[in-house]
Image (tube, rainbow, N blue to C red; front, side, top):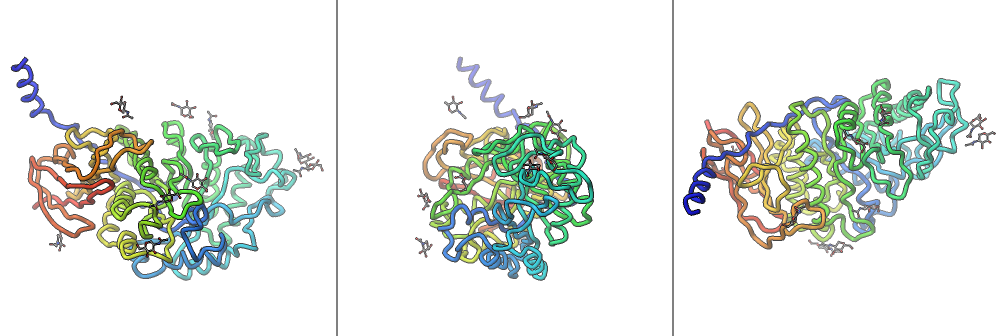
Length: 470
Ligand SMILES: *[C@@H]1O[C@H](CO)[C@@H](O)[C@H](O)[C@H]1NC(C)=O
Ligand SMILES: *[C@@H]1O[C@H](CO)[C@@H](O)[C@H](O)[C@H]1NC(C)=O
Ligand SMILES: *[C@@H]1O[C@H](CO)[C@@H](O)[C@H](O)[C@H]1NC(C)=O
Ligand SMILES: *[C@@H]1O[C@H](CO)[C@@H](O)[C@H](O)[C@H]1NC(C)=O
Ligand SMILES: *[C@@H]1O[C@H](CO)[C@@H](O)[C@H](O)[C@H]1NC(C)=O
Ligand SMILES: *[C@@H]1O[C@H](CO)[C@@H](O)[C@H](O)[C@H]1NC(C)=O
Ligand SMILES: *[C@@H]1O[C@H](CO)[C@@H](O)[C@H](O)[C@H]1NC(C)=O
Ligand SMILES: *[C@@H]1O[C@H](CO)[C@@H](O)[C@H](O)[C@H]1NC(C)=O
Ligand SMILES: *[C@@H]1O[C@H](CO)[C@@H](O)[C@H](O)[C@H]1NC(C)=O
């Protein structure tokens, strides 16, 4: 027995971690090379008590939030998109069944002009299908009645679903996107896409992925560049992932992370779930050996406001944006940009962090478990993006704290822990690296055979930029 265990210790010392397959991205279907950066209205719509200036979802309240994106530090960090969530449109279409903005809330052409004058861009929110009540209207440029294109399902959001095999369906999408283009829309968020989206009380068809294809084709024929983001918690198997990655620029990997009707925006246990959903998603991409043409959407960032408004501690705020950056996820804030604190400004605009975001956009991170290099969910975790051919990489070491119900891991180790990942665990042994701590601005180095290590309290992480030593 003794000899056997000594032998296995000796063997364990020789076992190396699985080799690292570096993940890379490529141009998205609508022509983008990085995830969108901006602000979206839904966090405040769902939690208006967080935002003293907010008296309702309308242009008057959205404008000052988005104007912050046009200030120098936000501009320098690459923010562009002012994304309106659900509620900007009327409950019926025009004479062709095209979507209309609610003129009591928004004047979208003039709002788009305002944003474009500041160098920003406008996003709108849509659902699959067209209004059931528009069934007798004729699709623009055709003699086809909308009701002849429907498949018989009313989704419960006033929309009837299309039968994507029917003539006229693509023409309707073209007419809607052409109208958006005439207003100056730059981004479409298509929600409740199936398979994947939870029903949430509606009557979703099992497969409305045809809407993703139709909006993509409509954008292409419109002559205006627009992003297409699809939501929420989309099916990840190859059958549908191949549709998403051929048509959309980002896909939601989790449900909403916002609280609802609260005085603060989110909860750490929900963030644990969002990080684990990214882990599940990205682990599926490792064996495919194909460049990734769609960016993940981990939902809005709730990091710019003080801890009591964000709903997460300062350390957790820093961990959230580090993970969203490392994942190359959309960097779309959902907080109150008119009320940011000093830490919020740093987290939202730090030039080293946004240089890392530019890097991650090409080299998204993957999990490498401390001690094994595996990809499981773990409370004490390590991640790596890259290394690039130029010898650069981004690393996160994290202590997620005791597991919430959907953390993926189920340990509950309390307080400060040492999180240590060897270069072998990370899959990059064989050379030495200079290590720059992105938030703390400190430098160190690690040589071949060494480890990266940090003492981290619950919810804490370190975000590191590695450069191969000369
Ligand atoms: C369409 O027109 C027919 C005949 O006038 C009418 O019975 C039906 O209710 C109309 N449908 C809608 C959705 O307006
Ligand atoms: C569809 O529109 C046609 C023409 O207006 C109408 O005759 C028919 O009743 C409509 N069908 C439904 C289900 O509304
Ligand atoms: C799902 O919808 C897409 C697009 O309309 C279609 O190509 C595909 O065949 C559908 N899949 C199933 C299983 O119905
Ligand atoms: C992919 O997901 C769809 C919808 O959840 C399911 O019907 C289909 O069987 C899955 N296909 C594979 C190959 O797993
Ligand atoms: C986010 O807000 C929406 C709208 O209030 C709500 O339906 C949803 O449940 C919220 N998400 C969570 C995780 O509470
Ligand atoms: C939240 O915390 C900030 C300081 O971090 C404080 O100024 C503010 O009054 C607090 N707000 C509430 C509602 O407690
Ligand atoms: C955020 O709001 C929720 C729901 O109202 C509450 O349970 C929680 O304690 C709040 N979190 C913080 C950090 O204040
Ligand atoms: C949680 O821990 C139990 C007991 O160790 C184990 O059986 C179970 O598989 C774990 N679940 C997850 C999701 O890791
Ligand atoms: C850390 O290293 C970077 C270059 O790798 C350098 O620009 C920076 O000044 C260094 N910071 C400190 C505090 O030495």
